[in-house]
Length: 460
Image 1 (cartoon, helix red, strand yellow):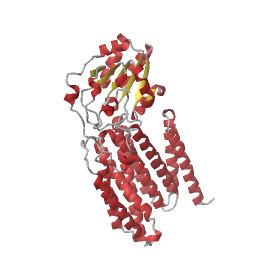
Image 2 (tube, helix red, strand yellow):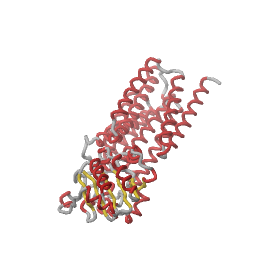
Image 3 (tube, rainbow, N blue to C red):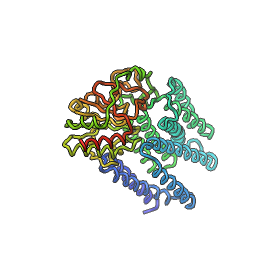
Image 4 (cartoon, helix red, strand yellow):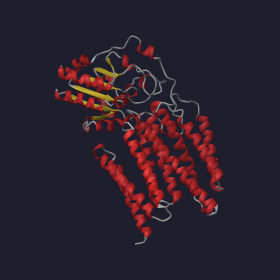
């Protein structure tokens, strides 16, 4: 068997491992194994590439591996669970930026070093990489800035600008394919960079999980296009898998939030006009409570539903929540966790967070399954969640979250909201749930409040 056949077999093996890894990631119980299988596939792919011809010298490779490993190790140790969405956004951006640089290097080599004719060049994937990679890189940086709250306001009315930029990108793409030049390449990168800004800037904070999923898909498509530029089969397959899984996840997220996939793809997913002020919503209708009062309430409950949100992650309160749940279960109370598809700021954020605290996966219930049963819930306890339980999504058509399905905690006999203050969530709007007749507000840090509540339950 010749060298080329061995390399292609290694690529095939890596691709199979990628697919098996993705299958493992579909369930929490097999997620760790799936991650390891995917990592093994990447190792096989990288080893095959390094052993093939035309690779730079081993010194440069080892230096790159050392620097990358050091950066990865530092990030793994330093980054908190609350900052994972921002890290994912940056990873997406790095993937897009790397694809652009690789395509630029290949085009430069073809034009300057090999003097290839336009017909002999892979201009279509080069153009696709330039446009998609640039959109991914700059769009991801804007998403990072929004998640990090460096950009707090959405810029509206950019749809006509996006349309003009899209037409300009098509024209430059046609020019680059017909007459490949580095000037045309960088002009296309420039248009893609501006598109990255203008596509993400209008999108409101509550819709950022959808944007993260879409940018993940874009990074995969950019990598697949780069695979065609390089003639690398495993990069084509891996990029296609990421691109396809990302667009499927985006579609699922859109359905969960009652958003249009086309509006996300074309950057028309703008924030709404807001709604009533906090004074109008809350004025004189907030009922404060204490851990002792909630413990007495729980003493007569037979079914309790927890609704975790981003505030739980910020307070690192998942272990305290589990302890409270265990205390209730020891008293014969049925306990469940209601998981909204976009709870937190990234798909699957809450599932990972609760798994870290060894919460049984069987107790995690998706929104569609638990909502029809919420009227039989004695006490719903909302921990650091705002937008995913906001009834304004159903009652206010002008709300930025209008139409987004929510967890119906307002149907529970009593709802307890654990929260530091009445400050709004990521969507930036007040929550009428906090002023509802059956809602009690337990103000304070989520972790401390849950610890006190668990102690009060045990003493009651």
